[in-house]
Image (cartoon, rainbow, N blue to C red; front, side):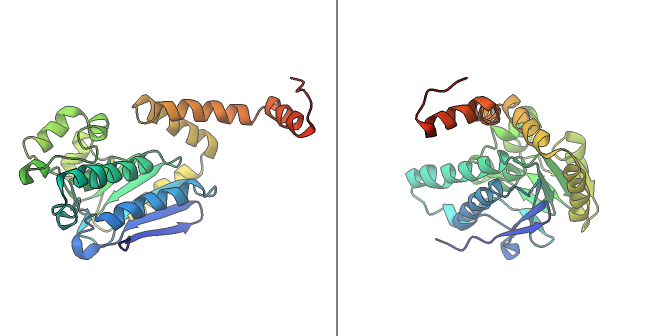
Amino acid sequence: MPESRIGLEIEGHVALVTLDRADKRNALDAGMVDGLATACRTLEHEDAIRVVILTGAGDRAFCAGGDIRAWSGMAPDDFGRFWLRQGHDAFAAIARLRQPVIAVLNGDTFGGGLELAACADLRIAESHAKIALPETGLGIIPGWSGTQRASRRFGAQLVRRMALFGEAFDADAALRLGIVDHVAESGTGMARARQIAGQVCARAPLATELTKMLLNAAEGEETERVLEAMAGIAAARSEELQEGLAAFREKRSARF
């Protein structure tokens, strides 16, 4: 397994996930994709974590997309079966985290980097950030839900402008167009993210988690899982379950 280069730090109720490959503008390789999925599994089981901040190392890029060297030599079947499917799984894990996710776009956010940012619940772009979907210029498609989740979150026409016509946007334009939610001066994005994270941590954690699940379901992100998870939480909190379990242990009929 390649080195993941995904940093995970926990600061009280806040987790910081960092794409740690600044020398390659935080371009994603197979190890990093797997590392993102692993980080999500850890975060799902950390009850103390109420909000996640996602960013890139250095000051040049949040993420320049998928590392061309990592996928360009793959056979077409392997490209679809492994690179695209595993990327989808990792990105879906981020989008479906029970905690709100804040992405700090601290530089270039291209291709898979923008698809990754689309998984967040809120995006802060530093003023020098550039945003684009350049895949069709390379003869490939936006394959990590750039045509799907990004369209739901940013609007299909805006994705068309980037993916079909090659438009790129600076941070201020991205704010006007709704791709990002805030613009911060270069070098201050993390401070702004921590301030917003503090506001999230002051809110009721269960209500926040359930509300995120409902919002995801409204977008078609995970409707089936949300419905069953919420119903399961309600059932698990009921006196009926306690009686059913007690009856099972005592080998008697349940008295509901």
